[in-house]
Image (cartoon, rainbow, N blue to C red; front, side, top):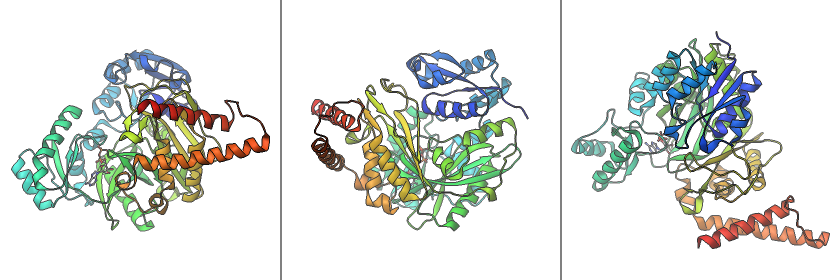
Length: 503
Ligand code: ADP
């Protein structure tokens, strides 16, 4: 067992800070890396040491594995935490880290390889009778054969890139007439995004829920699961609201999914934190989708309901410690929700927005956690993921977590850039979300920019009414930029200007 003195976090923004905070609590020193675009980022200031790795584009900075390993050697670093994205699921990098005598805080390169490719991962778990979405078990290249297979599977089908991730290289095909066109698109997107054009075909589940299980395994063969996360509110096949537990699962299904997830992890000798993703249909039948061999963006909801610090566990596992708890010690307490506050415009198909955070005031209070990597006045760089913050609320039950989330969204003041905040408030208030009866079609079925405008108009009318009564009662003008009313006014003024400018 090796106790770490110093770790390097090969990432940026909120996840770099998230990892560093736990490291500091554990008495471990931290090294940040940063690109020229992130020179003034909070993660750089928080770290004990920080090194610039290059110009803004990731392939000239955060993806330079060899350079990062050299920095580790120069600074006497014991281990590397990759966060998510960038090098986190890069088996070559994790192998080179070990070869350099360092420890990769994550799974073995072999596990990453087995699970990094969707088809290979299906083959790996096939022996365990884990339910799979009906589909081809190998890559398809021949169109005629592919069409025959799709007919057997039954339309609609989904063409997926085997090396895929981030919702890319995925195409729904409604009927045979559209097959050729969608196949061409899927293959070319797979080549551009992943340098690998292999695609396979799956039955398209028409009203699916995305439910995933968090697992933790140590280097001694122990694996436990930490229950599920429900991640069905998605745009472009990507999550935007997550919660734990899922209100749809029965205790029996939860138990079964948990056990299957542990089997998947064992199938690839997994250690570290990982996530086994399932798709669940209307009858609550579930099917294995893939395993993500890293810490997920949405891990905080699991931390809130289990009381387990996943980063601390990852570090202990990497040091060689056995898990300090067994499955029977884990319980679900309360309910947690996370929203991703992204620099995106929900009124414009969730396209990334650029700009400066003119106002950036975080919500606070009981049951509110904000994991972020920005401060007021900072620019959101165009080079990276457009996520500004993760807002997490925790309550004794789902209703309390939702009420806290709505309150916290209202308290979160961001101006200068379009965000997903108000869209997430729309979700919190929607009857489908409130009832728990929703699936990945949520946005397509219920959301339009007009509905967001209606909601905001109502909110503004309410603010106006509150302001009017405030002025009547206090008989004075509110001018302070610090007061809630003052900020609400500034906020509306910015939005009105922005809309005028756009139209
Ligand atoms: P990626 O690795 O690109 O994120 P996933 O396989 O994890 O891809 O799928 C992402 C999302 O795409 C899922 O959460 C789900 O919404 C949708 N999806 C994937 N497979 C299917 C399927 N067979 N039927 C319906 N939706 C699917």
